[in-house]
Image: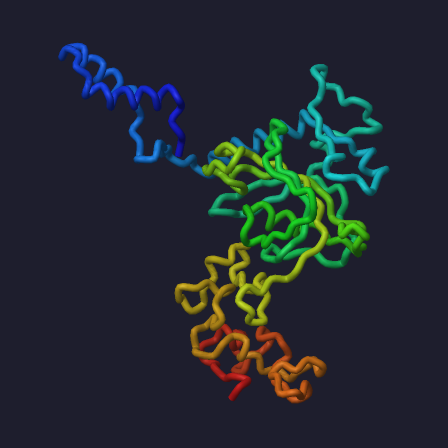
Length: 345
């Protein structure tokens, strides 16, 4: 959708008013024809539709643009290495001077030398996307593509225009972000520790830090978003602090495990073909027994009172419905309509 520019808009208004003006017929007819054919058709709200680009063709365009960017831009690698407490503002990406020579190679590194190329399939298109790994992060845990994360970030276009940023850590559900985030952040580890300061701010130790470079197809693609034009490649600097495993339907099956076909898309996994994808369906196989109640394995946690009767030692279920397969057919009970036994039976 495109907005009319001011000239087109004014012309259209004039064309509508001219019908009531008392001009001579030949002048009226002339102006009406000219203005009628100069005004784009609108859909009632001042917008016109344009056809969407082919994703495969656009990916080729975007990839060429990003690879060219890496060949002409560098970053301040030595400063970041020598100053571990740097902020996102301290990550400086600069364009080569006109002579094409890298200024002070002891302090700076070409993006093309450090960029990591990754691939994924999205909307049936093979996409390349790119990360600059400044710090891996030293926790033993990483987020899954469907988890909740706490980050600082700054989003910009390839021309350097910043369109979004956070001044303090913010929380995201990766299932509610553009596709690139859920693929990039699992490549980094969380921070190892944090300290709450007297002023309420939090300092994190050794977070994952990087820059992601996303083709438009893994961003907003054909949709304009704020200051982001259609078909814009996106650059995000980020610090990854924490992550929390999501279980969107509270069925004790982590959401990332409900991606049965492994394509990093939770919306197309629907075992019982009802209106709800498995990750938001409390009865995944539609057999009338809730997924959480198809957890029959002996309780391995004797300190948690799962059934709320005051005795944590007599509970049924170990808190994991994925390891219960009563008939031994290789399909866990919660996905198998042949097994509807409940721990409440």
